[in-house]
Length: 501
Image 1 (cartoon, one colour):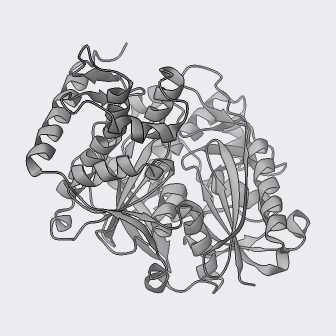
Image 2 (cartoon, rainbow, N blue to C red):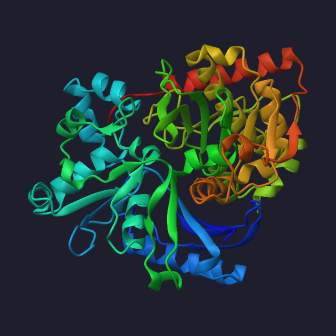
């Protein structure tokens, strides 16, 4: 049994990848599922769509690999974090569509929590800020807006889970209600210092303890799938939220190691070891993974717009047909122009956390054209990463002495131009791995570790393979000039904030 099946349940699609014992990929399958936008700022998924698409891709990947359930040592699950499902304990029926992590409907609940003075205790215990992004206020919203839900929850009839927890419950035929510490740490309900659900937080946000899953290690025996699903039972032995799974897949096991994933947005995590570091720069403190009861922590920064800046060039402006055109186009830009795009299309993420501001272009001339806009769009991702990098170094002084290399993954890393510019602006090496499926690999590793398919972390780290290292190649004077221009542009955007309404 030298195969591991990784479920990578994402925001727009469900994927399944079969990994061999040497971490090479035997087969993969992917299926998109519908998104629902019932009101401005609302994003929902039908839980049944998440479930059926997941089962379908698992079956497809197993078939393509030419194996059967008995050949698979374990299943690992990684998932879109913070997305919230509430379902009936007896029937398994969801009482409302899943509220997706991007959903902003609980902004008023969050504003009231802040106005009531709860932010210091919530931030201290959870490492998070009060924001609609996280699961806790989404659960409260469902309980308050679905008729009878709060009374049913009080009677112990309803269950809450993030997507990993919901899939685990369905995979085990309703036998197991559990999650791992990484997903629990994204709910606003979990104390990252004690590793427990916190009664004070539950009371503040208004979520009954009876709804909550058991919290386990990221690599643990969670249960097994029912035999009817895949032709035989398979152990489920690893769970982690997608960004934490990518951190594991990138083998960032040592304090000071950092990874950045470039998809629609960008998520950077810095391993800070066994001590949680409280951010002074609006970064999140989160659980990177929990093994054998020991939590390893990370500082996390999120950028809302990375790959979606390239989508804007393609779909909004029509200046490219394919994302791959942006690098060569940026190469043709006029070096005498300094055009800056601050892509605050949906506000700004870390380290600013201002949802109200909107994007802007600075430095336009009569000669500014498609090449300069492509240059500015790609560079904006690098500048935003620099802001996270600088905030992390300020929050965690140990990083000043650590030899920091950034490990990258995600769709945008295919652009050599962008990765080279990233190395130049960070003034640090940027490493792109051979296996780009780092999120699924992280889930597979956690499951395979428990099932004795994969070795302990330091030995697994030896399997990490470099595809290309981008080394800084920009003069310090140019770098400082460009970073100063970016800082002025961000200042201009932040100054445009007219407040609520």
